[in-house]
Image (cartoon, rainbow, N blue to C red):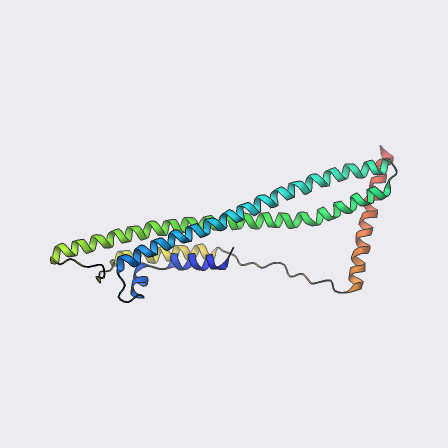
Length: 230
């Protein structure tokens, strides 16, 4: 997930109308509020787009994992058949393919788990943004209502650049909303990938090839043993 989305969502959720208005001199409060609500809509669209990519990646990884497992099972049958027919070279090739598939499976499983976690996190962002939008719209309604009541009381209508501000009760709700989102962000983990060293030594590369050959020979021997029993 892009860091920009996290930063944007955090800024929107933790911010309040008063902070926005006070930071813009001579700006019309209602216009600033309406623009803030439109920004929330834009953020929701952005998070939904990221969610769609995450869901697609999880689906692709799941399909590839299923294909890898199916291919592994098919190769097992082919290995037994090759041994029965005395075609050890074919059995070795099939075993080598099995090892390659087994190396891919953990990566695919990790990708699926990561995507599932990110999917849940993005869904939480969308829910928080939608709640923020409802709160902001209610604040805007109360702001307009307070200005209308003030105009009735004083007999003077306030223009679009009036200095009226939402009351302290609105500020309290904004503060609570910010605290709630902070708890959401605290649940977000920033775990990095595993730190694996590069095999730059020729001796290590040779040792890896030797180990792979040994595993192929072990499986070939096991296949031969099964063939003798049958």
